[in-house]
Image (tube, rainbow, N blue to C red; front, top):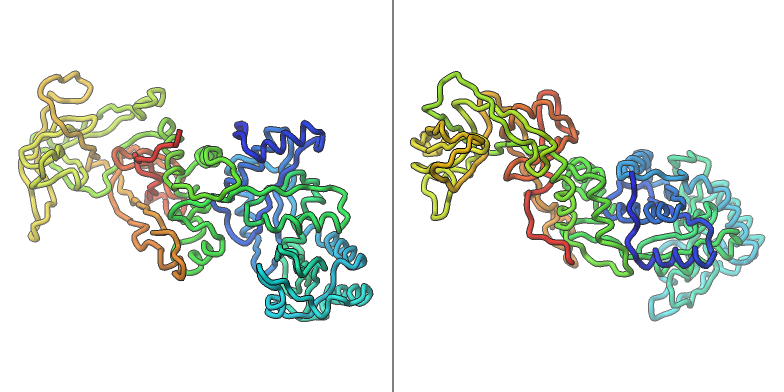
Length: 551
C-alpha cells in the first residue's frame, strides 16, 4: 500500500522541527492498544496517524500490546487487533508486549524505592480516594509514606513472591500530595492480582499500572514521539517523571491530540463490550458496531477508512464528527469499483401477458455506467418478473411516475410495460400485476417514440436468486443524556431483515463481494451468515446523502 503524506498539523510540525534541529535521527512511533476488546473507528484514526507519519519521514512504527491487566485481557483480542491493523493496510516494524518488559519494570521500580521515590502502601482503594483530595483541596499523606527504603524493598519483594492478597498492598510513587495536578498525588505504580496472564502465565502476581508501564515501554523501544488522546494530557507530567526518575536512557516525548467522536456512536470499549455481553448485537463484528471488524463485515474498505481519517485531520480539540462523513468516503471509494446490479428487496410479481410463454431473452447492460472499462453483463428477461412493492400504487398521488393502473413505465435495460389488471388476495392486498409490454421499446434500439417519466428496476422471476437483505439504522438513537444509561438509547429498529431476489449472475457472489443495487445502495455479502445455499447482503450505505465535505 502506498501511503499518502499526512496533512499538515501541529504534530507533524513538531516532527519536522525535531528532525531539522537534529533532536532525532529517525522518528519512532507506536500504536499501543490494550487487548481488552476489539478496535473501533477511533483507534483507526490513531493507527493511521502513527503509521503514516512514520512512513512519511522514513521512520518506524511498533505495534505494542499494553497488557498490564490480566483480568481484562485475552489472546482473542490480541489476534483481532493484529488482523485489523493489517487489514487497514499497515505493517508494524516491531511487535511487542508490555509484559515482555515486566522484569525491567520491576527493576526500575526498585530504583525508585532505593531513591526514596516510591513506597509500599497498605491503604485500601477507598481510603486512598478519600485522602487524595479534590481540585480545590490538597491530598493527605499516607501513614505509610515514610517507611524506610529497606522496609519498602522487603515488602515489594514479598508482594512479588505472592505473600499478600489482592488489594492488600500497592506500590505508590512518592511525589506531591499537594500538587494541583491530582495525577501527581502519589499515584499507584503496582497492584496485586493473583491471576493468570495471557502472555506470562502465573509468573507474576504484581502488575504495573498503565501510567508507570507506558513511559517505560516507550523509552525501552526508543519511541521518539508518543502520540495519545487528550484525556492523557494531565498524565504527561507523570510520564516525564517516570522516565526521569527511573533513569531511562531514551527520552521520548508525549503529545496529545483530540479523540474522534462520531454522532450516534458509542466509542467506549467498555460500553461496546456491554452491548456484546448483553446480546444487543451478535458480536464484536456486528455490522452496526463501530469496530473495525464490524465495519469490515458491513462492507467498508480500508481505503475509505484511511481517507476518512486523513480528512478529519489532527487537532488539539475533541469535536464530534457527523457519521455521514464516514459514509461519504465509502460511497466515493466504491462508486467506480463495484458492479451495479438489480435486486428486489420487497417483491411484487408482474405477469407480462402478451410476452410469449416459455421464451427467455438475454438483455445487455453495463456493469458500471460510470466505469465502462468494467464491461457488460447479460440479464435474462421473460414473461414473469418481480418489481418492488413500492414501485406500484393503486391510487397514486400527483407526480407519482412509477407503475399504477393504466400507466406506462420503463423497465431498466428492458421494455416499456403498462399496468392493466391488479390481482388481490381475500384481504384486499395486491399480490400480482398483469401488464403488457411494447416490443418496439427495447433499450438500446434507439426507440424515439413516446416518452415515459418513470424507470423501475426488476429481476426475472424464473431465474432470480433468493437473497436476504440486512438493512441498518444507527445503533444509538441520540447522544447520551446525563443520568440516563446509554443502553436506553439503543435503537430497537437498528436492524431490519427482509427477503427478496437478485439477478441470477449473483449466484456466484462470495463473502465480502460488494455491489451497488440500483436505487437501494451499496451492499456487501455477509461473511458470517452467507452459505452455499443462502445469500445474505449487508447494506453498507444508501446511494445518496445531503452531506458534503466542508470546503
